[in-house]
Amino acid sequence: MCGIVGAVAQRNIVPVLIEGLRRLEYRGYDSCGVAVVTSEGPARVRSVSRVAELDEQARESHFEGVTGIAHTRWATHGAPTVNNAHPIFSRNALAIVHNGIIENYEALREALRAKGYEFVSQTDTEVIAHLIHSLYKGDLFSAVREAVQQLAGAYAIGVVHKDQPHTVVGARAGSPLVVGLGSGENFLASDALAIAGSASHVVYLEEGDVCELTLEGVRIAERGGSEVQREAREVLAYGGTVELGPYRHYMQKEIFEQPGAIGNTIPATDTFEPELFGANAREVFKGIDSILILACGTSYYAGVTAKYWLESVAKIRTEVEIASEYRYRESVPNPRALVVTISQSGETADTLAALKHAQSLGMEHTLAVCNVATSHMVRLTELNFLTHAGREIGVASTKAFTTQLVGLFILAVTLGKLRGHVSAEQEAQYLKLLRHLPAALNGVLALEPQIIAWADEFARKENALFLGRGLHYPIALEGALKLKEISYIHAEAYPAGELKHGPLALVTEAMPVVTVAPNDALLEKLKSNMQEVRARGGELYVFADADTHITSEDGIHVIRMPEHYGLLSPILHVVPLQLLAYHTACARGTDVDKPRNLAKSVTVE
Ligand code: F6R
Image (cartoon, rainbow, N blue to C red):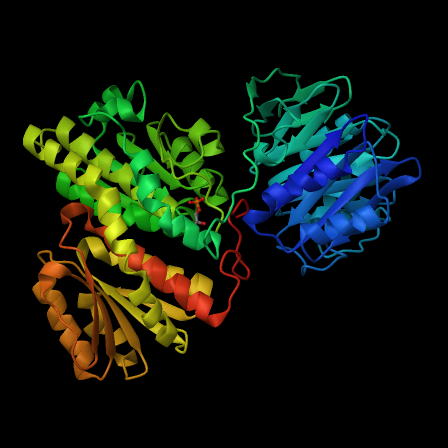
């Protein structure tokens, strides 16, 4: 999603700005641009192609400058055209880049039109540009501080003005922004990753902060207006681009990295102790009486799976809510609930807003299951469990999901033990199951050639149904989401028992029905549901545990999974669904790692 990079230096900073954009590219964008300050006003190059094309334009036109701002845009207001690409100008004096959405932009636009401002783009960003311009009286820092008070919505911005050629001003509320400290030069970015290496330290701006970067240093003013000092943290050097190695796409690489990522996520301890979640977790866990899980997309499905574990293993009442719904719903807060947020990026706007909403309702016990240690979410929560999936580049989440499941299972067993529902013997068994998981996953990954054969058939379909029951219903949901987001095939998932209550009407010979068939307590029920499909001519594609003894026959295609893996079975069963989606998308020739309309880190509402 949108990315910001800005810098003030004594050298040509354009290559650094463009390199920053390149590092943010994997998040998804549809246009990009860079502006520098010149004595005649800001100058810019913009592109609706890739950052590489922007770089080419900049090199060819000898586009250079010591102070500048750059952006990757994921369109919200206005189509992805060059004209709507950032940086956006105001009267050839000021340039701005913006992440987020301004909710009161229509009212502001009318007020600014009345003052004579002309609007040349369809963006909500242009109102911020003109607003700051209208308030500018020789000090950009003051003008931005005044302007942001009039903004409703979410924003992270970077602004430059021709009359202050060595100044960049930034501000944030609802969207992340960091300041980078270099030697004799300073930086601004929506993610430390973009400026790591150029900046040795970063300062994470707080909600409502406005900052001013000059060659001499950085000033930060908090929402109330007074200047504040914020802690500077060391930023690790940029690890470089992630090599694809023998894989065709990052998604395929990340699917195959799952055994390692899971191995890295399982702690090296022999027992499940609350301290795995933070120093004061024991005390917090003892005081809670329920769990409220908040997340979006794939992370939400991890939460739905966790509900089954938390209720069956820890015997603790658990609710799971889609973050974007919860934040706007009138709910009954329970101060004794532990609020668990799940996120790969830790920057998802809806999940962060839902977390803050829960906190504002008096739910102070919070825990993040997250893949990014420095993320906003980890900083906002009392406790955390870090998944060690490594960088996930493919937009479709894979290894982040399975490592989240590992973290959530560990939470369930830890709480179960603390609450007296998990014996020492069971604890040892769960640990053994976890430790063997990477090897078991390797067995599932070896099924890839059989899945490729199925994918060739799926590539010719336009619809698919996914069925699962109990603990594997969320896995069916995740399988359907993977298929639709990267292959663009319409897919729906149902708990298999629901079929006869409506969706069975969709079943014909043209409808492939993917079935997740573990050898668990619901197997016989599931087999009856499969018969309901067969009786209507539906083609079944079944991922069956070896010990189910389900075999291929007319209209029933079976890929044999390893033997049933108990409570951790969902982690094995999601992998062939990821591979099926991946190879179907490859067969259809879609842009697997950057599916249309989607972004990796959804930092707007
Ligand atoms: C789907 C996918 C998304 C994310 C969702 C939440 O493959 O990746 O549905 O799971 O946008 O993102 P995070 O986990 O970063 O909060």
